[in-house]
Image (cartoon, rainbow, N blue to C red; front, side, top):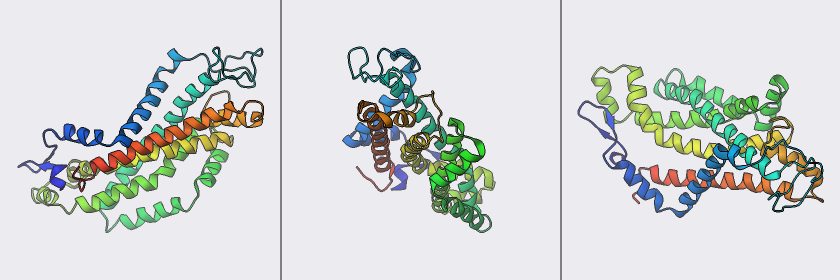
Length: 295
């Protein structure tokens, strides 16, 4: 039922049928798990934007309140330097979301054109591109990230680059697969017969048809990047103290698990909740944007 997703004008141009957005939203609202994911993701985004107005300075130290348990003064307690745990976790949400979103954007900026060209010129470029993708997949993420940290040094920027490169194969494969299907459709053949050039066909006719699959892939890729950033920061290869991130907070909390277990519990819950939210949202989008789904 591809005609439910896209329509073709007499000139051969893709247009979205009227009311498609409203129909998609109604179908999305019928999925409680997807709505839960949307609420969780929206909450984290609002938290990341409103952090400076909601919490104290995450670097402010109070040596009279070190390792304090949760209380009215410090809702989630304090760490070994007397820093407010809520402020550090809240600021860590901004860093983790920044790493997740920017890394997937980097992967899409690079991977979409590569996958588009590989799928469209499959006879010449496809074998070369896919072999390069296989080379990237041959390296486990941690080995690749450790190598990048050794060469470039540990920092949030380098974490974003490492995560983006790690997401590249998935973006390239999704784009390539969609292009292989869409380029055989009638409206693309009509555009070719009408004399449209390759660039116009790829970006005006083929790429819009792959948008839904790429949106879902991006939504599912963000939690993977969040976990990757937390892992690298926990190992000392990512965000460096005193900048707070969930991985950095977990690193400082591991030596105080007996005295202050809450320091490790809260960032761990945030990572799990963010991952759950993006996965639920991605699953809902996959169901709603699937042309084979009728509900």
